[in-house]
Image 1: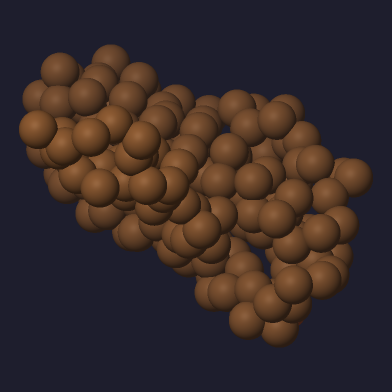
Image 2: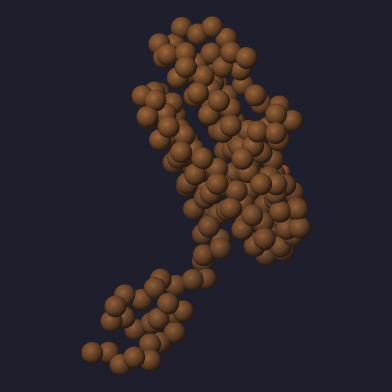
Length: 183
Ligand SMILES: [Fe+2]
C-alpha cells in the first residue's frame, strides 16, 4: 500500500525504492533485536565493556530503521515495521541462540552486520542506477556508520593477530621469526 506523493520521482522508481527500503527496514529491526539479544546474554571475557558496546550498536540500528522507514514514507510508501513484518521480510539469518561466550556473540554479530552492510551497499548501487540521488545519499551515510560499527566489532576478534610480514621482513604471518636467511 502506498500513498499519493508529490516527490518528483517517477512512480515506478518510487515503488522499487520503497520495496528496497522496506527490506532494509526489516533487516535493521532484526539486527537491532539481535544485538539486544547479545547485550542481554553475553557472559565471560570483557563482559561489561562489550555489554555496553552492544547497547550503543543497537541504538544505531534502531535509528537506521527510522531513517529507512521515513525515507519510504517520504516517497509515498507504507513502512512495514512491525516485529512480525520484520521477521517475515528480513534477509538476516536468526541469531546464534547457543552463543554464550563473548567471542561467540562477536562472531555472530560480525556476520549479521556484514550481511546488513552488503545489502545497504547493493541498495546504493541500485538507487544510483535508478538515478535517485537522495536515497543514495541517505544509504551512503548509513553505510559509513555501519562499517564503522563493524570495525568496532571486528577489532575485538582481530586484536591478537599480527600483520603479515612484508617481503624481507623478520617475521612470518604467525608472528614467528623467519627461518629463511635474509638476502
Ligand atoms: Fe540494557
